Image 1: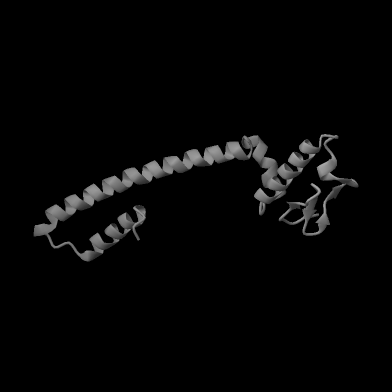
Image 2 (image 1 turned 135 degrees about the vertical axis):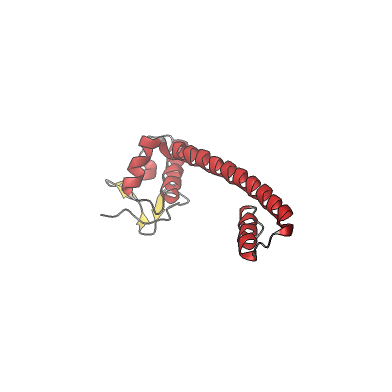
Length: 132
């Protein structure tokens, strides 16, 4: 069976509302299952709704996999580290490409270098610099 579709919301009474109506688990409103502390119940309901909506499009198997990888925050940190590493590699390659292109253009004066060499190279540099 598939889970209730997103988006979920919290109504003015602190109950979780779904496109199918109010959410019940085992006959108990989920926002009211955490004891008698009304602030805690509201906080739990907000967390449930935020988590469900943030995970839209993920399979249950993907969600079950996340805790083994440090949870969403741990997985995000890993992705951010990889992203920053990729950005550094791009910047290093870009600097090298620019230096090499400038050098080639300086020595090219006596050599007939076709545009097919320089144009794609310059376009690639522009893309990497986000100038396109």
